[in-house]
Image (cartoon, rainbow, N blue to C red; front, side, top):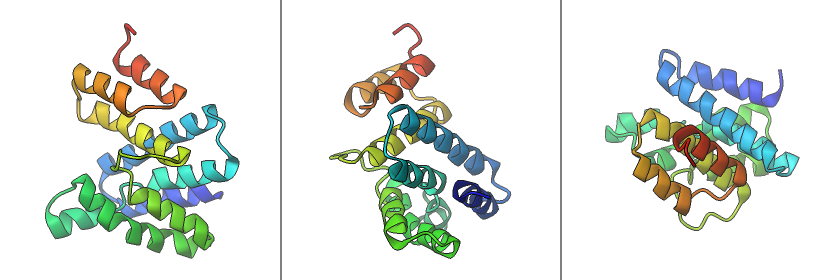
Length: 165
């Protein structure tokens, strides 16, 4: 079993009985993988991105228990310790775990995105959330012009939601 397969199984176990959450992270993972590959990011960054996409919402359970909310700010607060607890036993090196945890702690932070793994994770999560939350065409157009920067992410967003573009 490769590393992303191990993380996928651990995350399915983590969200046992919650198919909505499982479906969500699987979709985000596949969009992140696709965008990263199409944008030709560095293989090490690609692996970090893929693992981060799998665990990006790991803070939701604790957020809902502690704050009765799955708000992005609470996910970013609660997610990194949970991600670290899941990843360390799998033998990932500390810098890898640190970067994944940083991404988990910033995947709803849209200002000042500087690294490609962060940009792609945000875009992949948004592609899934736009559908799951039934965002309006205007909201999608706004995000297209203000948040999306990768050519692949823009293409996917337009193709999925703005078919006349």
